[in-house]
Structure formats: C-alpha cells, structure tokens
Image 1 (cartoon, one colour):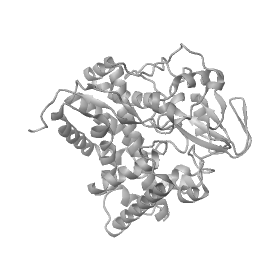
Image 2: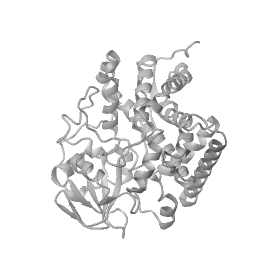
Image 3: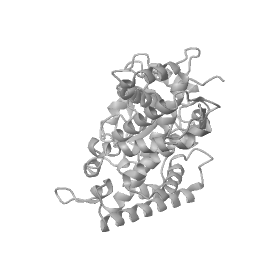
Image 4: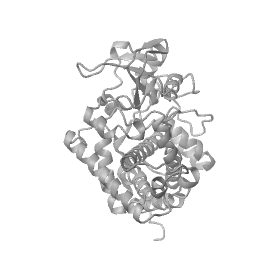
Length: 423
C-alpha cells in the first residue's frame, strides 16, 4: 500500500488563485497542504486569503518562520484577546463564555494568569509523572499486545494523554471518558463525526466548567500535594485565581494537553512508517530520543494555526495590515521553512539544531504543557520500541476533518503478538 508522504513536491507550480489553506476538506484528504504553503513562502509569505464563507472578511495568511515568530512575540499590536485566538469568528455569546480563558488573554491579564499557573508546570512537577506515564504506556501495550493488530489512535495515541491529564488533575478515572468526549466536541468542530450543533457544544462547555468547579471545591475542602491545590492557593502577594478562571483553565488544559499529544503521537508513528530507516536508527541508538521527539513535533505540527487580530495599523512582510484585520499564523508551514531548516522535508530523528515552533512561536502564549508533551512522547515511543519493535501500518489512516488540529481518527497497525508483562 502506498503511503501519503509529506515530501516537498516540485512537480506543480501553484498560482495564487488556487490557494486555499483553510478548507477542512483539504486537510482531511491530504494533511497539511505543503505544496501551497511552499508557494506562499516563496512568493507571497504574508498572503491576503479570502474567507470561504460569503460575506465574511478575509485574513492574512502568515507562512514564513520569521514572520510567525515575530507576530507571536508581539501581543501588541497582534492581540489574542480581540475576537479570540481561534480562526472561526466567535459570536458575542461565545466570547462572553470563553473570553477569559488564558489562551485568549493579552498582557497584563495573561501575565497575571500565567504567573499563577506556571508553578504547577515546572520540570520538577512534571517529572513526578514519569513513573506514572511509564506504567500507563506498559498497561496500554499489555492490553493490545496479544491481539497482533489494533487501531493505534484508539489504543495508544488517544488514551495516553487523556490518562496523564486525569492523573495531573487528580481526576477520578471514571471521569476520563467524559473529558475525552468534551474535548472532541469542543475541538473537532469541522468534522461531521463530532459536530453536534451549537446547543451541544454549549452544553459540553457548561458540563466541563461544572466539573472543573466540583474539582476545585474538592481541593478546597481536602487539599492534596498536586497541581490543582497549587493552582488554587494564593501566591506570595495574596493573589489567587478566580473560580471562573480555574474552570476555563481546566477546559484549556484538558483540550490542549489531550489533543496535541494525541496528534503528535499518531503523526509521529506515521512518520516512522514512512521512514522505517529512522525507526531502525532510533531503535539502535536511544540517545536520539530527545531530538526525535523535537523532530516529531516539527514534522507533525499538531496545531496547524492560531489567529491574532491587529489592534492598530501596522506592517508585516511588506504588507500593510489594518486595525481589525485577522492575522493567521500557520505553524505547519513555518516548520517547513527552507530559510530556517536544512532539508525541511526530510524526517530526521537526529536533527540538531531544530528551532521548530510546534509548541508556539515564543512570546506570552508559548505552550504551557511543553515539558509534559515531551515526556509523554519520549516514553510512549521508547516503550513501543522495546515491546513492539516490528509495528507496521496495516490499513489506510483516516484523518480528522480539521484546519486546526492536524489529527487522525484511525491508524490501523499490526505487530507480532506477545504476552503482557508478567504473564
């Protein structure tokens, strides 16, 4: 079976009228449209793109690494709060519901919130999860190993980050399926399999927030040595996170920590199927695991884009940006920029340096869960290398229909059956 690869093609020249890097169907059929992005980087790196919906204003598509980083690091004039950081235009009700989420804040409000939550995401705090994550990975393989075949997304990529987030929050294991359901409904809004209409989406958000409130109440009455207790505690100046801010943070953490790691795990496994020489290279030299993890994140670019809104007239890449314009940052394009990466269309587990922006382009919104994502990815691939070294693709992968998450719904795999550990 022929694999759909992500190697840069040069067999077709794209003209601007053909450019459409926002249609979810494009991503569902073939993943990130690297041919289009390559043309844009070379010919029109800050490109005015019409919106596919009639009557909706267009946007600036920012495709070069340098420009994505520049915008990411300047909350003024490029705001995450004005109209939120999502590509879709939120209604006034949605902005009222989600507008206080840290992801959609600018300094100084973002600075205040980030300082309060950072204390729970230090390398030391995240490092405490290593044994737990390793146990989860072995339990997942124990369940699948005797079968000889499975859906990689269902058995590995989806449950690992979900169970890790539950452990991080101290959430009951019986709640993990509800968290998974809420996360899918709130993120996969382009995919018919997950779309339930505005009423269902609003209900999911309300249920998620209520669950977060119950979690906060439980920790207030019975504190633990965990991240939730630390987040709810006042800082040295007596400042503390509000209940609404905490509820929105739990939603953001559960979605971001779940979806992005799931996508990187699934896309990373596919990258190894496409380049089995890199799998064998990593299998022979485990010291490459840290650089392999960074290359997986660069290659997959789990989150394809976020938007900003210009607060004032400004200039970017020689283009005049007007106040109120939508500016969309395409991380998958920036992570293939030939101006920054040697052989960017080669998957290289030893790539060093690797200044990818798969965790964001720096600045105030650099990914809070970077340490956790790296730990999850390192341990899951290390465990698969140990226990399923001959894992292989066994069918056609099914992609998520989304221009936001570069995800997969199904990846059939096979491997030599084996007994669970200890039996």
